Image 1 (cartoon, helix red, strand yellow):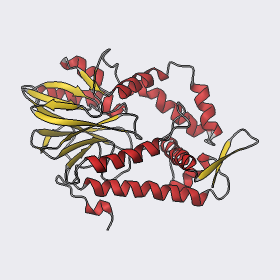
Image 2 (cartoon, rainbow, N blue to C red):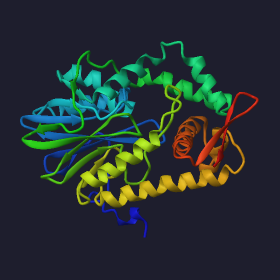
Image 3 (spheres, rainbow, N blue to C red):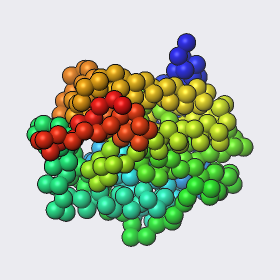
Length: 344
């Protein structure tokens, strides 16, 4: 039996988009639609005295704004948002942070790295680094169609987000945040994003996991040209091990995608095995030197569009970098200026 089969899903059906439902005492679950292959994000509202603390926002588009306006005029009219916490810089989580903070007079709470990373990505389209990034992708074997899709997506980050407030309240690992009289321990994770925020209420057995642990998909873990030698997979696996040690297995895990579930440790174990299997597959494929882009179809044999190819490439390179650091692969520069890798 796989670990996924051992998971327990207390709420077998997701709420209709824009309609909050109680998923745990004092916690509302709100699902907003996304215009991507991963077509939704889970937002959570935590009871906070006279109102609700908001965890994440959805992307900046007309549909999401309309849902928020309907919420503020309806279910949240009497008990309004009291604070805004954003878990990480991805646009489905922080996209409407500036707009919602301004609309409701809220202070934005984030980790420092995620706040600064949001600001960096919003300004990325205005920089002169595009050709350097294009060279990075070319050197790793991507074709022009895929490169164009990645660059277009990154430039589009600015339009999927709103300007953040000029100041924020920093939270960091080890902090305790009191929301509505309940103590939430702040945990942070790496790999999917640099300092992703999670909240654990031990007394109530509730763990708000953001994108760090999802029930049915593995969070994307990618290398990007701003930090080409980074090891996000190592960061991700380190975080999983730390969560397994720190968070009880029986908590109700409230993730940012898919359904809430129980048996966190089983899912952590499955994700860890998944990435070990990916590394084994790469080692098998790289008996002869390959460009990282040439490894992508070995891990993702289905047909990918250009958008999906960008994510698949980033994740493949994350595994390659992890294996290079572990001594399981070696890099071999070619006469064409491109770097190939071979199993050690």
